Length: 383
Image: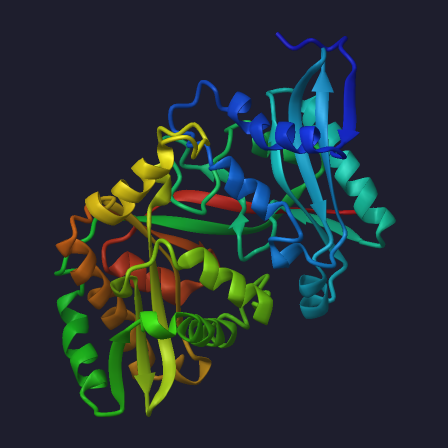
């Protein structure tokens, strides 16, 4: 039974001890959830540090913890993403890293604190959750609580959606994660001849990432992404310092076969990125890397190889979107990635996330055997 008489105290995160409480609070929220995987604490701390995460650089941000009966019971971050505002001019401030016990009063108090602060910053609406950006963990899980999340995908409590809606938030957009049991015969017969015909040209070539020019190829990947995704809902381009940061983050976990490039007429035209499911690797770490979990991490990631992987990004430059070769490239890159990952024991995978409005991509992924099994929702509210 809820303790309705207890006072809820919303305090800003101001000290290193506060930040540690902010990071670890989620572990208490999910203590009885067998599908929750505690993220590595050092990694979350780095993502919340503007000196280490360029997404936060120069942008107003504030965090709060909700306290009740002397214990931390919820948290939230409010963030003014200048790159989003420059792109969309929509007056949207963002919230994220939202967690709460099953008490609507706690959730409302946290959401009100974030909304009030964003209004003080001149924002006209609050949108989220974004942890910290659309290019990091995005959305509130509203369906698919019965399985653990893949790497860089959020988990959630079934009661969160009702809390946001009771606080006056409404749906802005849904995104889907598709479960996919990897196999080499995934291309429907009706598509095979079309793909072979479209790619039967010397204009097309494929290659894996060049590890000796890793940062250069990550820049090429981002250039394709920034072009291919530019018309998508909520799109925010990567900046040069974010590209540098991405390369540093990916380097320890990427093998050459995880990234496939297609070149068309000698120019980079498409890519696919597959991430080993680090969540599966750290599932029993409890958020700690020291003193000995780092050895397990290296063994499970580099030697044993995780049996799960996620494809978070795939893109084809816009000039090829309406042409047969564009669709054929997408199928072929998935085929090349699958072949190499299956050789290394891949048994489960996720294709995520896909906007509900992206009919062409959803159609393709469903056609090849993908199954929507999780739904993430972005909420908004006028200020």
